[in-house]
Structure formats: structure tokens, C-alpha cells
Image (cartoon, rainbow, N blue to C red; front, side, top):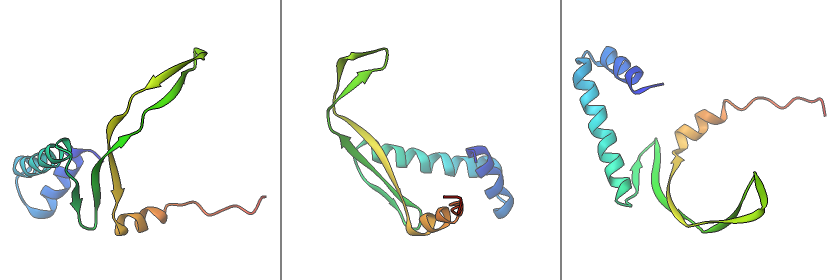
Amino acid sequence: MTKRDLVVRISEETGLVQQQVLNVIQRTLDHISEAVAKGKTVELRNFGVFEVKVRKARIGRNPNSPEKDVRIPPRAVVKFKPGKEMRQEVIKLTPPESNKA
């Protein structure tokens, strides 16, 4: 689903003009991005939590020259933890185990 799909769907459901819906969605995403960029945690009930985590420094390897170690510095990354309702819906997508073992 794209932002455009979301705008069309909400516009059809609410009767609002697509441009108004787009403005609201874009401002919402801008505020979420801004908060996360400042290191804040954004919690949307029944949806999930966006938070910044710092990955530790580590040693990696270049596949083209595996004999050389490459130092990978620590860096901040955005993590998303889905809410309970979303997790439950996604779990339903798990394919059943086959008994071919």
C-alpha cells in the first residue's frame, strides 16, 4: 500500500477531498519523522512504537576480500515494534507447517 492508496481509501470512506487527506497524512508523517529524528519514541496505540536504537560497533567482512576485516562504527537506527493487534493479525499469515518431515 502506498501513501496514494491510503489517501484515496480514506477520502472515499470519509468523503473528504483527497488533497485535504493528503495534507493530514503528510503532516502526521512529518511530525513522526521529526520526533524520531530528535531521538524521541513515538507510540501509536494499537499500531506500534517507533524508537531510536544505537547499534554497537562491530567487525564486518568485505565479501570481495574476506581476508580483510572492516570496522563498522556504531550508528543510530530506527526500530519499529508492532502493537499487539497488528502482531496478532500478521501471525495469521503464517503458513501452516507441512507434515513432510
